[in-house]
Length: 155
Image (cartoon, rainbow, N blue to C red; front, side, top):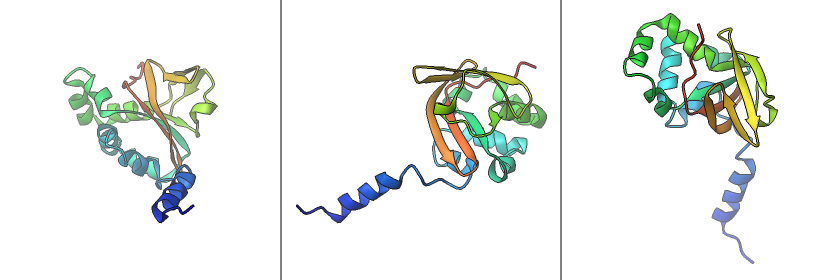
């Protein structure tokens, strides 16, 4: 039985697909079309270099549609206030690398300093009131979980 080179090549890609990482969290987030607002917020807040150069971090990144759920002027106001924007972005980042399989229900401290609540129920993971809709996007300095809602610091 002959196998085409394309079939063999696609098997190789599938076999190694989960082990190759984009180089950092920002680059990994940039490969998808859904994190443009989060990346822009991280850059404006001055946190993009942190997400590129240190870690490991677990980033619960809201999608662009999650940002669109915010009241109309909220994002525009935040983008003009670097300090509040930095608080918001860092509230979505947890020190260490937590894959979905590693989630232990309970509170974890964010880079911002406050705690968020993680839950895991039959494979459904939430962080505060946001659902993880895509998980375990690996980078060499952490992992990204796509969430459907922007979580807001309590302060």
